[in-house]
Image (cartoon, rainbow, N blue to C red):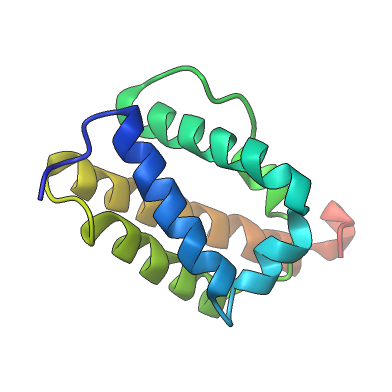
Length: 130
């Protein structure tokens, strides 16, 4: 297996991830309810750009990833499944420093998102989203 070396590999990683997500009993419905059929191509492109920015400092991604997650009713079990699917999407196809970096950065994002969501849920009056 080769390492993640550029955009073509990121496309494979993202496509494999969403193939698994769409079929998943735990998190599939969250994505399918949030993203309309017509929005999937632009979402996929945005996620490829996101991972290109994360792994290769490519500046094609514009946005705030957390803002799309803050109002979702998600918790540890959803993050566990997301992480499991991402690990499979990376390590079933790639091996090397960039593959490990993708997982490491994803784990850090997970911790950040879980922390922020917990803070918002414990302060509903302050954030007024629940």
